[in-house]
Image (cartoon, rainbow, N blue to C red; front, side, top):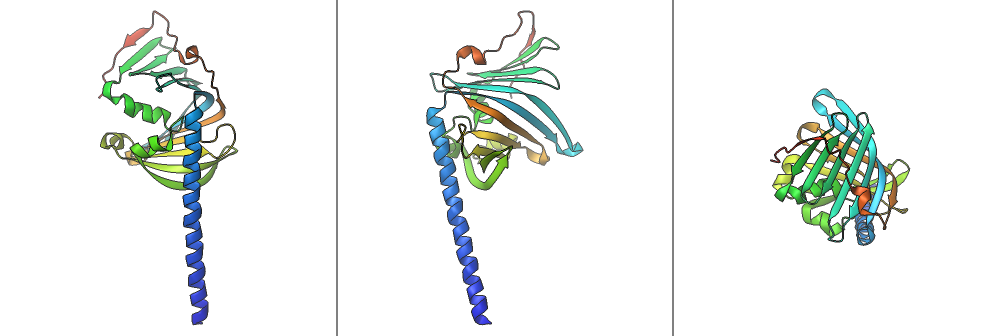
Length: 234
């Protein structure tokens, strides 16, 4: 039966080789689509569901709302998230400032990100107009495989941070990049893994790319009498 074992081994080798080849092609295709999307990206809107998982008590907290992302003329990003359930909350990111407004208490927290601006921008915006070079410069990239998010066919990428500062917060980041449609090359889902099994999972649906998104679309309107605080960023 030596001939049978030899043929079987050859088949396994050929099969493994074809998987590796198709995996390389899949990763190159995902990078190409990300680069194409990055070159044309100017703005987008979408619905968002953000789940925060606490492993110690196996508990999930879900915030549901909408997101608006806009690229400025300076090639930086502005972002506004308006969560409506279970409690209304607005998160605004622009330049070196992050703002969180809670209408129920009419309170606003304003964070001066300083040198941490680039790191925070990575967390919020990775996969939204980011080129493959942007991703590879900050992360070691591994192909996770093809997957379906909602009804969208995607390629899942596993990103391991190169920066120790980033790795202290998130040991691994996964993004699901749309393979086709108007949002091809854009992340439709992101999962940020913390130590100990905690994670944040953000899923985007109804994505609409908008090249004419105006500045006021990402503006945070806060009442003048809102109580403001300025927590320190460490």
